[in-house]
Amino acid sequence: MLRLVNLLYYLVQIVLICDYVKRSTSHGSLPDEEPLKLQLDDYHRFTCQESTLKIKCYPDEGNFMVIESAVYGRRKEEICNPQKFQTCYDPNAIASVQRLCFGTTYCEVPVNDREFSNPCLPDIEKYLETEHQCADDFIYMCSGKDKVVRIDEPKTGYITTFNYPKGMPPRSSCKLDLRTNPGQHLQVQILHMPDEANANQCSTLVIEDIDNNDRRLSVPSCNRTDEQTDGIFKHLRVDYQGGTRRRGFLIKYTG
Image (tube, rainbow, N blue to C red; front, side, top):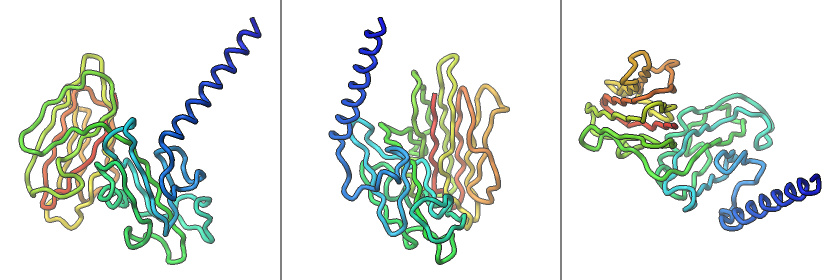
């Protein structure tokens, strides 16, 4: 019996190794791909200053790229071998990365102070930390009429404005009702709502549970403090009231 268990164990290990080799070979590597030590996994990367971030969505992963987070600066001491350390970063770096990558299958992002705002002292070596996913589709809002969409089975998806991350006509509004099956709930996270600090009127994104008025997120596009940006909802309503600049938003839902 013990021999049989050991044999099965080794067979499983062989299958896992073969699958890894097959996947690595079929995907290959991107030109000048970042060293492995700067990749926590396929979707979470660190790219040193004066280098180029190169990311790709393969056909078996999804047809569209989504940047879930991007930070330019320095928050870890050991990344990219710095001579000096300072905790400093630009929280709006995601806007630059989305502009080059969102909705594509391959993109290149120059990592330097010309592409991003420099949040650090002049002699601090910086890096770009990114997390991305590859998606099959998006739920688009603000393309004309309000929408009602039903989620029939558990999945991860994204809600965005029809021409995100570009701007839209000012002072207009749109709504989306996202309905689920009995017993199903959605974990919702606002990934990006561009800063509109210089606008005469802020945009406002409101996410609420149709069945429970106590479950509610309200995030303005300017004068933000520490508003909550995630929650769990059953029947989801997204209400977007556009300000003078109206740059849109990106939401992730799971469930």
